[in-house]
Length: 291
Image 1: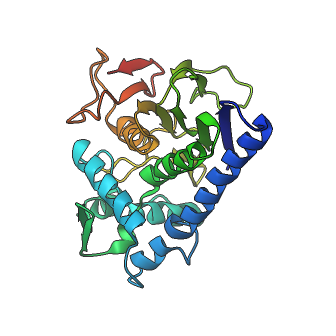
Image 2: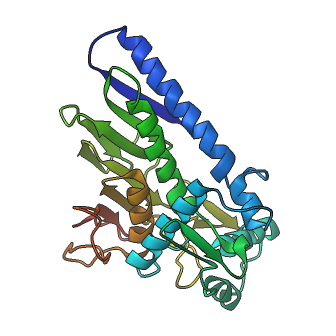
């Protein structure tokens, strides 16, 4: 996964040294959080908690609370309880056989196995169903940005962690971000649009790059919680929010819910500050701006 940290220097010291220190601080924070939150490390605190082998550390509780908040804001379009559904699709890819829709729908219909409020966590049912992928990367980006901004001399910084991007610090140093077109994901392809970002974050959910290949049929990795079935691979939603965690979750929910043909506000209640804004590209390829 690509990691970029860019820092604006405010004077005093050598600019390259300040930028390197900001990069190292952000990377160290990412490494620290990976030990706690990774879904791909069997020894992570997250996976141990899912298996009933230890309590959830405070940072995991904070992410679960943010995930439940977005589950409720999006009326279930953002769903942190689809881990078993994703596992079933991976099994289908290995076997080369599409699962029965009723089986997948039953897995998707299971209730959320945790409640996280006010830094308190209670659990019930199958914790193996918990999947924080749709918000954890953005949450880590926010923490990386905080780490970079603590370095003396850093006036503004931007963190790009595999396409989840956050900018912070002085609003006098905005950046321009190109949004990938989901119908053309080549590195040298023309962008769908360009966004001016200042003290905000941006994230995109799309099925163009990752997914499941089942018996020669390509299915995007974004799951519709209502059916458990992958969304069309060309569907895309880019969200802009005050934090990368909010942008990450809003993009995931927006890819499921979209917005109406008039470009009216995404159905999130209440709005997160003055955000999110979103650029939605359904399978028909007609771009809609939601506010």
